[in-house]
Image (cartoon, rainbow, N blue to C red; front, side, top):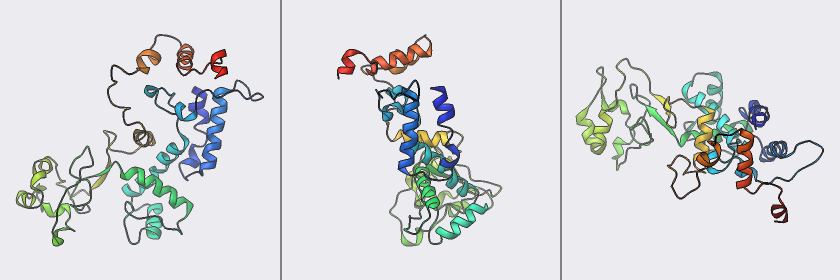
Length: 284
């Protein structure tokens, strides 16, 4: 397990952080990892008792916590659009934005048929970012009031309308008194009366700092491949972070927290999954 997680899974990390691998290559990598896990030697192929999909489940869901190759690939690529958003003056950002984002922003641009393979991968990572991305207000000059999540520092809360035509393109800076860094309470109550109290808890920059992006799943607000993979997996396992219901089987209590060597814990795990070559299991 240690070799599979620390060595084999880490070998393709560099190309996976640059490009979106084809599904066929991801399946080949998955096959190598699967065979390494179940086979004691390379000369003889043994039976795979548990599917790879179950092995990639979190330990609390009965899996072993191995990384799904495609989800991990997307989480690594998402670091590229995150860097482009936070460092728009870097060479990579200026080249790609100038080529593909002439009519729309990076977060809203759609995929075209003539896009390169590298850009397709970046947009796949972008789609993962957008689901949990928000704005932290500095001077409010680059954040629109409508259509961008800036109300809450911990969740993607969007202001709701309806809006008048002359108010649809307003920026957050239009709600801030110039030079003081304080909110214009009168303007807030006109545009967002239901959210005035929540907005007043935010503190705009007094020194004129620019607005920045925040990644909601972690307290630091900074994106990482680990948090991106967890966010991508959370949509598949919505009950992973919820309290365990007393009537359900608790894997942590019954298997992983048992005071025994790791080898015995894996034996218990195999027994519960009927993954031992007993006569009855072989007959099935």
